[in-house]
Length: 170
Image (cartoon, rainbow, N blue to C red; front, side):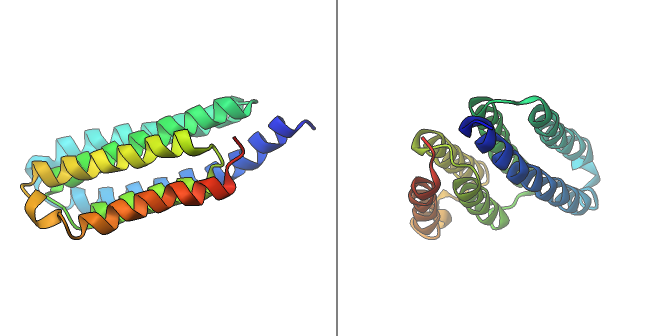
């Protein structure tokens, strides 16, 4: 087995676990969100449908991917889409508290699970930052989100770059 195929195989196993975690999380958050405001239910259902669709797309794509580059690109699209859709869901439910935790978890997990190098992890960290800013700005919380806890969250995104450099294959 050549190195690239072996890497793709190992990372694909990791991503299967990550997608299962994402599905369980989406169902948990979705259940709570659907129990909330009836006026937001159509938006919640639509957003959860998109999120679950992205997870299923990655699962199907992983079955076909044979090269590390294809796995990495598919995973980047998956992670960035989850970050941005998590922000949209948080805005929809008026939440500025759990989103930062989710963003840090996603950025940190991608840093250690996917050895894709600094460029891709930088895209993840920037997408997480954009997601955080969008949530805080949409909910009028920029003043209460910065400098604290925003600074600590930004530091965590930076740490994800350092962690990824330890596992990077590129």
